[in-house]
Length: 114
Image (cartoon, rainbow, N blue to C red):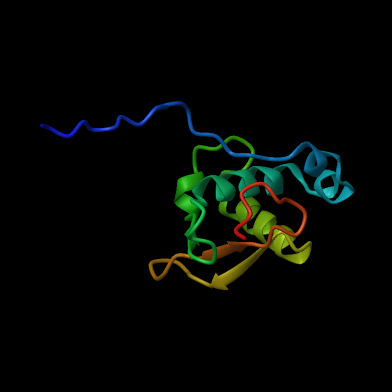
């Protein structure tokens, strides 16, 4: 007898989860537009097991409307760090290493590692 392979259902679209209660939080509403955009793109790179090792180079954001210049991205990262949404585990630089980010899940619990 041959073994039947189980097909994965799905093949659906990938998404980034954000709870409604997070959207209602005053901390979320106080973030600037570029900070929200960067956070969502950073969260899209999170796969459930790479927290603290999330890479999101500035060059990956170059085509994103509202958050494409180096200066805007830098301000967004500093804002997210100051307000406790993310931490930088490793600071990179030009032509060296990538920044490594960690999501704190302080205000957002969707996708939180337990």
